[in-house]
Image 1: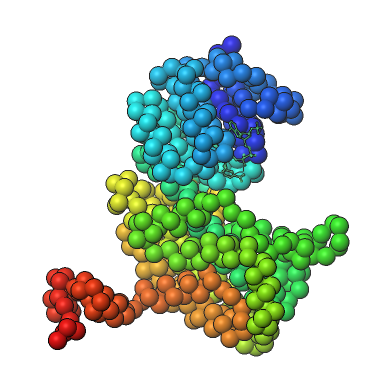
Image 2: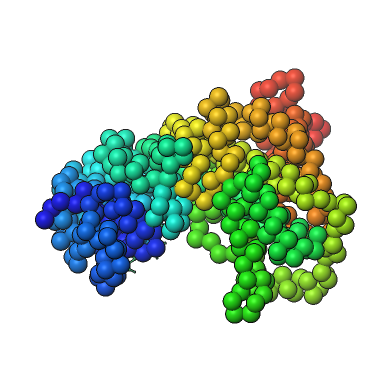
Length: 467
Ligand code: NDP
């Protein structure tokens, strides 16, 4: 029977949750998974929703179960599996059937797939929120031809998270625009997580707080300007106890952070765009460095452990909270700045205020600040977010605290790569005359690269080095 409104391939963590969400919102859905046993198990466990779900064993049956023109979501690992799945499907589909890659594709791959598809309908959408988001309302960033988005927008907006009734699902632009925005989202996520981890390090190593006190501090911060999903879960992680040993859970977790590559893609792309995102870069570097456990242990043997303890009258938890507020603003300012650069470079007209809006619910970086960010970007999308009046006022009130935290951490040997690079970015962005005149002098000295003068902006002036 060809009656399912949409199809989904890939019943892993995300695909299974998304399929249940779609069924829960009243849409009939057909599903197919490479491993057939998983399809059956998924259907058996779908409860009341099973009646809206058509499980299929073969791709032919799957395609046959869908209403025409078909719409099919792929939720398989990024890379070759997506290309393989598209090729296998296209052989069975009609020319007006739509394929939607909803995995974490590199946006360059999505650009290529959109071009390769030619007139065959294709969308690349970024989905954020992890398993729970996929099940109960993710944030969705769409890319591809607008007409294809419009074909499935009623389903995508129905299943998306809602912020005060407004769906967190938006079309971002042509080709890979949705996956690009998702990548920057993940970059910001890396930096936000890293800054929170650095605050945890100050509390644990600098202020000698136990995990219960750290958990309470995160819980208190979650009621103020830092209110966000990441602060909330950080408190819960700090509060958890290992059932096997009775120790704080954080004490038994190895300090080497994993990554699937989206943060790295963001940093590489930022370099191509010449977009300064130092806090995000620092967060990726911190994850790379965290995996060098043996080298770090050898370093501690060689140089000795740092003198971590900071007196409580030197650094208060209020100061630490303010430092994190400043760091967070700076990290988002960098992320949105990168999106603005890409918008120009790729001619995408990325809707910056709408991006802040779709991130307000459903996704991992959802936070109270995004409402004000959306307002500030609506006033002026080209302006660096740190210069928007509301955020400039917040930074004026908090950058001193960030400076205190970074200075105390430096004096006590606590590494704060993301917070300190956030501070360096702030100071660089408030310095009208920097030091690149020296770099230009050096470049001209050894390579005759030329420079602009303060009294003549044209390039091509040279210094008196040769005389
Ligand atoms: P899982 O590993 O849980 O599931 C992967 C699914 O893809 C399985 O159904 C698997 O089938 C199928 N699959 C794997 N390889 C192939 C292949 N070569 N051809 C066809 N099907 C294949 O992954 P997730 O659900 O976590 O992730 C899916 C996508 O969503 C990825 O792109 C991921 O980056 C992205 N994503 C994940 C998030 C998360 O929090 N987990 C958040 C946002 C996006 P089988 O059962 O046969 O192995």
